[in-house]
Image 1 (cartoon, rainbow, N blue to C red):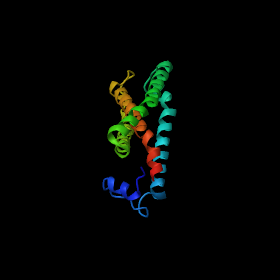
Image 2: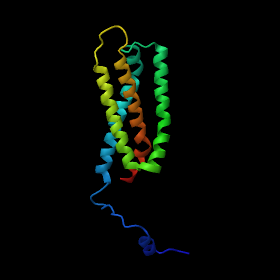
Image 3: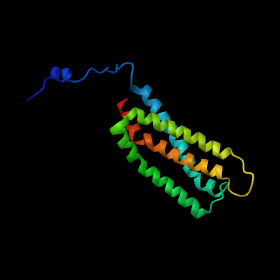
Image 4: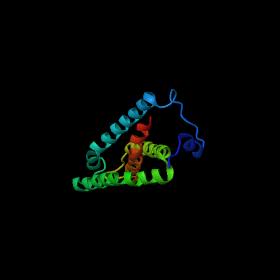
Length: 157
């Protein structure tokens, strides 16, 4: 049984269609490419200097710092599966990208704030360490939240 084009159109719910001349295209693609580039610069800036920061200002041993970095990167490898499921099942691509972006920016701001807290003694500053690791895992949540959605979102443009 073949379905004619008119029958398909009548069975679908009325949805506001995008106007091709004023939506999508290279204007949107440039924005997505710029945001992804800025995010990659931020991510690689953090991950490349992480062991140095953990062993320097935070005073961890090299083995402890390497273990913390491995746990963080392992968490970042697993989270896109969770976020992809959430995006497909509950939130949708746009909401997932928006929530993940907010978490990522919050994590970057908190990471910067944790680095600004001055040391008053040789001992570890517990507030700084707590803020640092909370910020690091917020960055992981944000980074991997839009990772499964942004490529498909960009392809739609």
